[in-house]
View 1 (cartoon, helix red, strand yellow):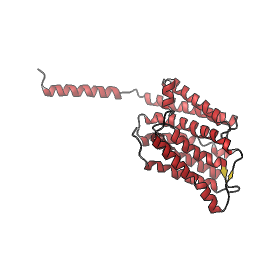
View 2 (tube, one colour):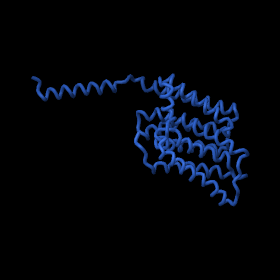
View 3 (cartoon, rainbow, N blue to C red):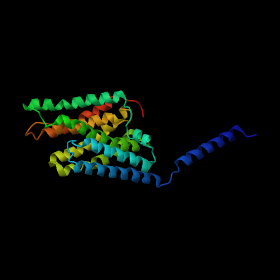
View 4 (tube, one colour):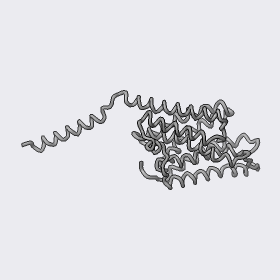
Length: 267
């Protein structure tokens, strides 16, 4: 007859063997996953930027087409690199039904951020001017600057990193590629605005990831916030004012962090 002590030792040994087998992954497994993840990110981002430049879509003029190409490329990357089906890939990228709380928070923060522009104009005693045909640019700006970028950087990059990490670990790791992807701004904007914009992308990655989770791991809340941050100053300006972009960048760096005051469903 086996004693209780012997039985307990035997059970503990079996549990220990299972734990060891689960954690005894090959040393090359994680680097291989990183290579696939970052390789897919680089290829899709190059497609994103190249297509937007070729179509002259700096204000979302061809945003729908750019977004469609990016989403198709991301779905293909999920299938080829990670073996996901079409439906699973879309779900993984964040194209699901959003949690209402996340949408409400993103909408409220976007409206609060937008209020900065008329307040600033009133303080300066100036009037806001809209870019010609701005109303027709809004859908393309949302598709390109909101949906496409959030599918790439939150749904794809942050989503993969989050699976085996805490929120803060995943958000921190996703911040660097997001910031590096915006270095091209140094070549197309005045240096003070370009440097501030790159810093903003570094700062903004974390609250956008928070909105992604508040929205039930969907891209719609961060896409709305990202669209507001990127799109407002492309369609509204105070003519001749060089300070307003820096004021907008400062506000965009601070207001989205209010998302951390709201609780959401645990992942």
